[in-house]
Length: 147
Image (cartoon, rainbow, N blue to C red; front, side, top):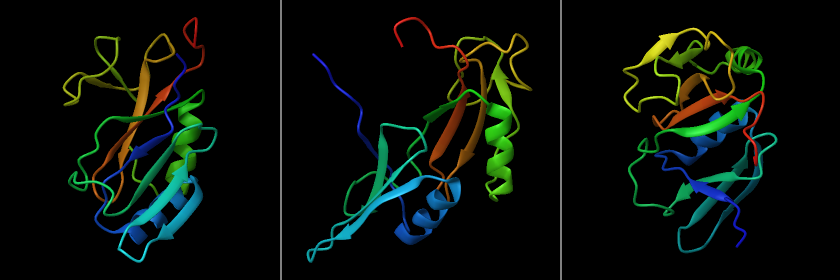
């Protein structure tokens, strides 16, 4: 069996505000269409990603801001953080988890600064979209075998 993750639905309260935010992030706008019955679909794709996000009107019953732990990856965490700050995105400082495995959902094990060994999968930054949907960027320099 072969499956690919294609789309993640993000719940937002203001579609045009979300469009402005994701464009400012540098995501590519792929679509914005509406139907006569009130369905609106907006699709954005992060640079270099095979998967996209969609948001709009009447797409999900989830509460705006309820998406948590959406992960992006980069080999240059400091560089991406700097670029997003220049784009006006409020983003955390670089952090890592004290356990060194992943990170706790509630942030209780966050330690300031990058992982001391600069291991792949061990350092992060985080930000929220205007509705509070949580995004985490994880540094991956060398992928695990089979990835």
